[in-house]
Length: 457
Image (cartoon, rainbow, N blue to C red; front, side):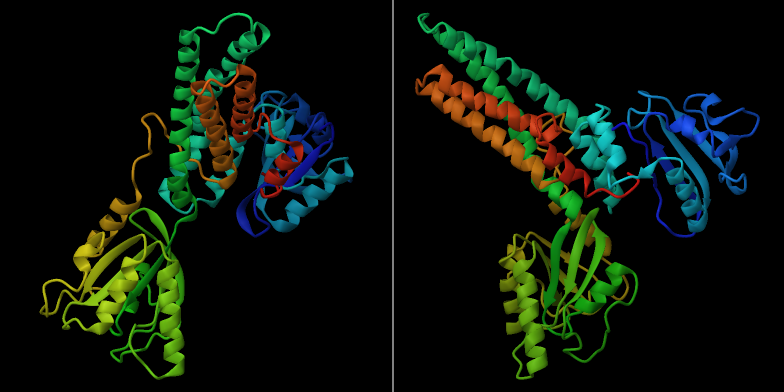
């Protein structure tokens, strides 16, 4: 990591500001040749971590831009190395000129995620915090922002450190039993070891249980709107989006294809599909739409089953309700609440998780729908003191592998297996726990993780 890297940390588009980052031993002295601070002799004479105004110049002395610059000396920087950061005007041409000057002076183009990778390798953050940066950039809901920020500020790291500290005590106990087999193992010793293992397993189980909530926070949930023709499904989609995405007509069967949109409802990101009305038909195009509607309901985690509250329920409503009940979660939505009700409760609605009455045209009842989704999908984290959820498959797999190793260790101790065999499971649990934070992760896996970051991060 002795070379100097540089990259734009903002998108290559016209904007108010653009940020260019530089990192590596000697990068501040290198910047003496292109940044000239107002009232200072050179970049290297600037105070640590204090912003300073100045001019960026090419090798021939011509100006590139004026900017604010911040210089940080190792190890008190984001990457743990000497760093420079220029906040200049958001001209892609000016940014390109600045980067070209840096490259001519000896820097090279940073690879995706290389700044954060250097921070990780220099011990400035662990892998859970590094991955949280990507989650924060990608966050689409307030819950996703909060979870990523909690991980970034060390919530997950602190919990894993507690677990690792307990685990690291165990090998010494087992080693003593292995090294001195002639000594009888006291029942209390085994009991004490099992107590520690149980504490660790409880912590790992809480993390494992948080993975499903973490997935929902990060990726959202697949949802589908289904119902009979002309129940108001497309009107509901438009009302939720706040704009006319779907064509609405008094003629039944207007929607024939699946319309997909993302929206936030109840603080949850929904990947929502509006579908064709369910009914018997001989029209081939409409029949394909009905088939796609059933498929969308089958693939959905949440089905919004829309009923026309002003119409007498029929076989189409029965079919829609049956399709909805096959999903893990469903909400019965009785639409057209502004019209006289034809019946009190639609078929099977009482079997669904929630029931709300709305008027898609006026927006009445949409706040109740918002609350219903929130109640279904914003459960608290599974353990007191756990303030961040696992949000990716890599973390979940490592936690589950550590938990499985400790389950084997517990079972083995209780069945009288020799300590040396149990020690292997304890060591595996240590390795797997370390994989979550990156302490015991292979270099190629680390490279793969950071390759998914943006350039400049």
